[in-house]
Each structure stands twice: as structure tokens, then as C-alpha cells.
Length: 173
Image 1 (cartoon, helix red, strand yellow):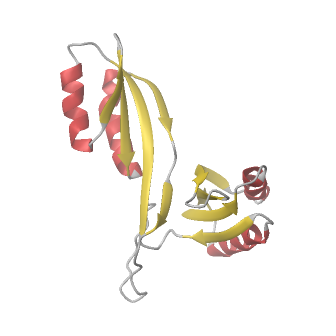
Image 2 (cartoon, rainbow, N blue to C red):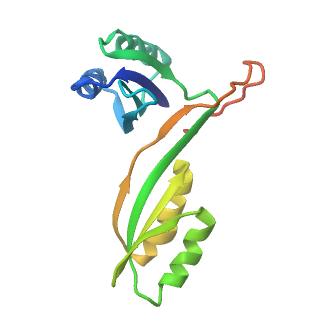
Image 3 (cartoon, rainbow, N blue to C red):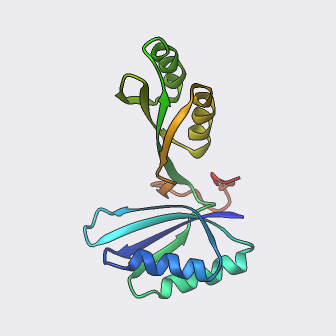
């Protein structure tokens, strides 16, 4: 089962290596990972999507991550109300005749053109993983030359529903 884990960590050299090493030793597959500074310069947030066998292994790895010296807090936010996005940069083959057609495809996705050359066009799209995947599939017939994706980044929404009000909010069904 796929889970979204966030970790607030001290912004120090080697922290990411120690965390990914722990996950690797426990044979967790990291499907995506994104890291960046938080509102405090001395802290970073790591968001990773992992594939785990069961809740017992998830609890075990969460406890072990919390014991790491530079880790401030680890949370499984999969079933919480969250805001989550992914960024993708997509370079496709293009010519002046196809640009209008490509623009009409990307407009409903709120994607933007970020670079144009004689024979390519580069597009930026942000959103849920399903949105990014859908746009990629629509652009595939034009000839994708390159894709760069950030992986999922997420945090909790401002207000969490009470447990009785909460249905599944997971983006990873």
C-alpha cells in the first residue's frame, strides 16, 4: 500500500542520506521524494511516497525515523486532509503548425508554455498526479522528448475534519 510520509528535519548535511538509507535497509521502495526548506531556514521538509506491506511495518519505520538525530517530526499524512501537488516539465516535438493545437490541449490543464524552439515546445504543469499523468498521455502522440517530475509534495490542510467527519482523503488509491 502506498503512503505519504512527511518529515521535518534539521537542514544539515547528510540528513537525507541517513533517512533514505534507513528506508532502503528496511526494503521500502521510495516511489517519489521531494525536499525543500520550510518557513524556518534551519529546517527542511521531506515528502516521500513509499510502498509498504502493512501498517505494522509502517509504524516500525515511522518510529525508527523519529529516533534519527536530525529528525524533528515524522507523520503519515495519507488519510488526512492534505494539499498535495506535483510539478512536471514536459518537452515535446513541435513545429509552428502544431503549436496552436498543443496549446488547446494544455489549456484545460492550466499548463503553461515555458520554452519554445524551432522544433520543440516545453510545458509546465502542476497538480495531482492523475492530472499530470493525463496530460502526459495526451501529449505522447506528439513525441515526448523529455520529462522531469518533482514527485509529490504535500502538507496538511489548515483545518482537519474530526475523525467522525473524515472520509478517505488519500491521493494514492
